[in-house]
View 1: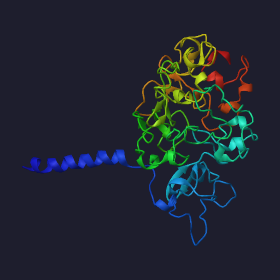
View 2 (view 1 turned 135 degrees about the vertical axis):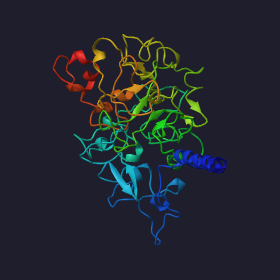
View 3 (view 1 turned 120 degrees about the horizontal axis):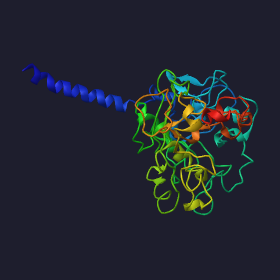
Length: 387
């Protein structure tokens, strides 16, 4: 009798536990932390957080009733993580001397941090109000699609979100603005690390539509701190061929916006920089991409290929946050081990996603990589016999 009595209660309890685990939003706390109903307080326009004169703090009004634009929450302090109304918020623009979050730091572009301002150090998004990047040629980004078949990303429309950005719903349509593209993502996002579905923006890795991965949500949340505490990235064993018959047009574009063609982080980068992430043929032509196969010799540095298990590559076995690898399946936990012959070379093995202190958003000083010079790290993390 007791079993019959308690069994329904047990089932209800388990349902609530499971439901809670998958519905607990990462954004919690008072709505006023992020939103304003009329953008007015005591008959004056409300400012966002902070008291300095940066243009993303308190100027103008914003869609979805938020108090600031992307950097209004994620670029407001001197620390890499700030607390807003009881919630920790990651910062992508800051001067924190203790380091940066996993995606890098836009402050290297403006010179607020690092060795000096340079447009070449990162994605010069217009939210920075740093002025256009003169290295753009107004028609196509490095390795990007060109011609009338695709909308061009140029110096004046590169952004954090929307079709010409990275995060949120990446599509061009009436009413989809930078902030509206993120609508619902922070509230729906399940408070779990393993994101292996990625069929919506909110359940994709770091709100990158269609990207699978494992988010570091532990003690060092949002950070690649060391071999035991870092994000885990998803990769595959060969890049796609982009073409109108299926490699891009029918695969990249979906009801949820522009997305990674193969759910990998490198495939996501390829939605803009496709010529750096493709096999020859298709849209880019026979001299495109890494070459005709996923085997050496390559004509461009390969991504979404297996790190070889022979030769110099076999020496890379201890995970390095200076040259991270991707995994062929989304793991259940963070690993400090690299497995040549299984793990994957990706775009983020060499580059930061927001910005770094080095040209081309590299994770290290490329000019300091001198073959036979006895160096370490950087390129030599994988190419162990060339140092």
